[in-house]
Length: 481
Image 1 (tube, rainbow, N blue to C red):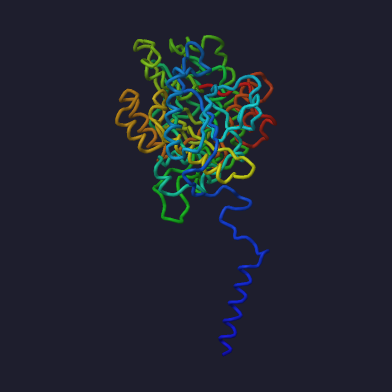
Image 2: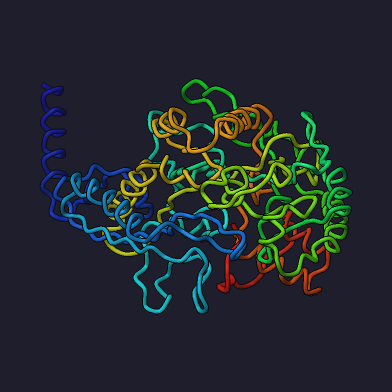
């Protein structure tokens, strides 16, 4: 009998709790403080999303070595329209507005971002970022990790995730893996052996024949500030930490390789390198002509677009003799062990945080759109770059019909394999676990350094992250191609 009394009491308590008018609401996962968790979206969801992208780059080093010249606006606009149409078939109630914006911000534009303060422009939901373009602060980006599964990760090349990770968390959907090389005339004696080389071997070559860098040369600084992470390894068992991201076993910049904790010795060493570089950077006018005639010992800081131009004359419409042939060299290591692989940087789509009601739905939709764009005809996107698609199916199509000469295409594939085995050298990230340096800010440092406003040691500290960055983001330009 006592047992039945207890059972009845439990039933009454449960009924009261169920029908009590002021009972707490049941909270679904993701409600409350953090809206950035996955959400199943209905097909009839309604929203408006804004994307900022750029024209596809093709450097014209003769006309202007510091800017990009994209393909005709109509074909690129049509590609974006086709991508949006495909997305609309999944979510017909979502309006997507794409703004093709200049690669280099104009006067009055902010360097990165997105707060809707650029002449009344609507704040974007998705932004395309890559090696020379401004990068919004990572704290303004929606982290990808909550939205990723191992199956989704496997759709992209493993190296791509290492390039878009900071502090163990992904900040963008990988689009491509870009290769940064230095250029040398075919006749130059540049001793970049199979075992790699350092800046000590490169500087005498540059001093004898001239070091060529574009006027907007922030890219040269970011190539010198490339850190090296741990070698990539096969994916671990479920639940284990992923290898390939910098960890306790990764070499440090003050030790055998670049990357890891910055030491006073690293600052002193990089400052000494910068001091030796400064007098070699008096290229003056005619940078494009010097590229055409190959009248220099080394060229640095131009990026994957000019590298492509160097190995693919048909794109540029120029002709050259064998004596004018240019060759690609891995950027020498300014710190640590000799470097035999190029510096890598990602192209990616990032999703901006936005406060307000419905942020969970808006963020999920923006994630879906950014992922969709990162896979859309990526092999066409990299056809004018020294770059490989990050998405595995697009990479397979690129390999089947490479847009480069066979030797150059094999060079990229071989160098990526070597970089993954030795540890990726990451553009503008002396510590590969940290956030990347903003290229627009690096360009500001470059200009102030050449003008004598920054000492070699101050610039070294800024590049290595051991000094406070500039208080304001610059809007006058971005790093050169």
